Each structure stands twice: as structure tokens, then as C-alpha cells.
Amino acid sequence: MAKNLKKLECDPSCGFMARSHDENELIKIGLEHAKGFHKELKITEKDLKSMIKAA
Ligand SMILES: [Zn+2]
Image (cartoon, rainbow, N blue to C red; front, side):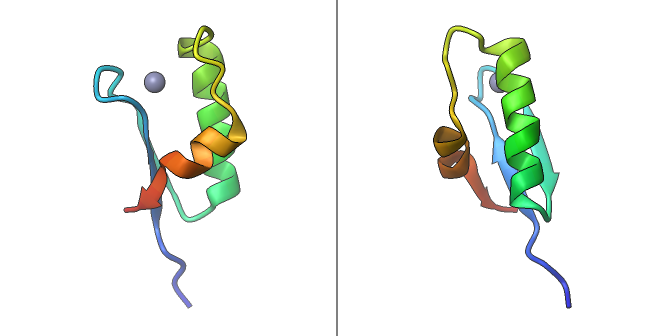
């Protein structure tokens, strides 16, 4: 059974995008990205969940 592919897109001005079947993995990737590139924004897991969409 195929899982739905999901994507996490950052702000267009940033251009970061990740795809995975695993939402938890995307959140992990997103937290790493936020830590490295958006220290001032304090992006939380909840924020990331709202940024994840069907790919
Ligand atoms: Zn970004």
C-alpha cells in the first residue's frame, strides 16, 4: 500500500523544500532547517505541521 507523499515548503524567499512519506521525518528535517537558517524565527513543530502539504 502506497503512502501519500508529503512536502514541507519553507518561505519562497528561502526556497527550501523537502519531500517524504513520513510526516515525522519532515518535521525533523524542518526543525534542523529552522535551526540552521531561521534562528530568529523560532519555528515550532506545530508551525511545521501547518506547513506540510500533500505533494
Ligand atoms: Zn527556510
